[in-house]
Image (cartoon, rainbow, N blue to C red; front, side, top):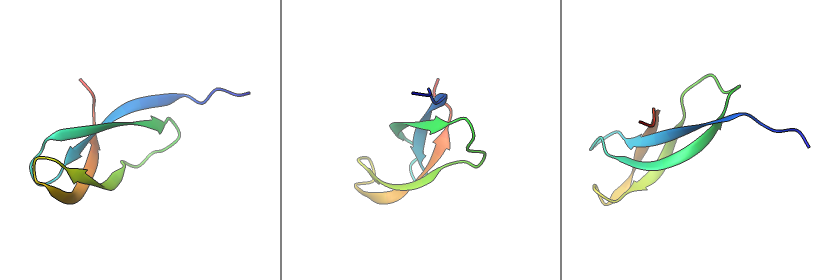
Length: 54
C-alpha cells in the first residue's frame, strides 16, 4: 500500500479570525482549502480558510 504525504493545516474563521479546526491536506493540492464549518465563537456556520499550524 502506497503512503500519501500529507501536511497538517489549520482552518481559520473568516469573520472572527479564530482557529477552530485542524485537517490534513495532500502535497499535490495547490490551491488553499475553503470549507463551510461551524464556528463556536460566532455560533453559526461560516467560511473557514486554510492557514499554517504553529
